[in-house]
Amino acid sequence: MSHAYFELGQMWTSYLDMEKQFIDYLKYVPLTDDHKKVYSSKLLRLMLQLGGYIDTAFKEISFCPDFNNNNDCLAIRRKTDKNGLITFDTYLTTFEPIYQLYSKKVIVKQLQCFSYRPLLIDVLYPFKVEKNRVVPKWWTAYNRVKHNMLKGLKNANVENSLSALSGAFLINLIFKPSIISLLEEGVARSHLSPATQPLEWAKCDKEFSIKILKQEEKSKNDLVVTVESKLFMRINRF
Image (cartoon, rainbow, N blue to C red; front, side, top):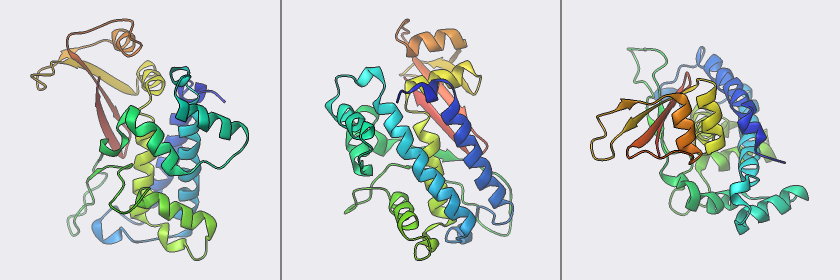
């Protein structure tokens, strides 16, 4: 296994397919506060896809050459090669020190306007773990769906699906080879911004942005990379 799936854009393409499934579902069950607990077999299938996707994505990242000397990543590689079980908290403890996963946020964009109901427009922290838990709530929901689809069906709801989808979106934006691929394909846009005056910014072409990420060039200013899908937005500073 290698991280080439990110570099080739396959992980992003797969993500967009799952996001489209969710947005299509929202045509019938709009994204509002009073629909958060609505569940269905369609969302169950999506949750299963999302869980497998995120598990695969973390494994892919662990095979990045940058982590050839990281013992935790090497342990994930060995288990992957042997088809061994890797728990989700293992991914979190491995990559939290590298990416600060718990504090990373995703903005949920407004899709439609329903004046008669409050819109569920929010800022999500997909990998944040609540007190007395070892994994995010949506991952627990995914496991319940995965291991007992009939009893776990209620866990395949709008709220958990949205949270899991935001995790799948975010995982594409923490890994530099993925961000570079998104810049190359024009999915991401970038600019330079002084750390002390973040509201000021200057244009930064794609090639220079990529060189900064690859550490082939330096800038006295922060590189700001923004990625938007139809549902989410994330702004990274490097």
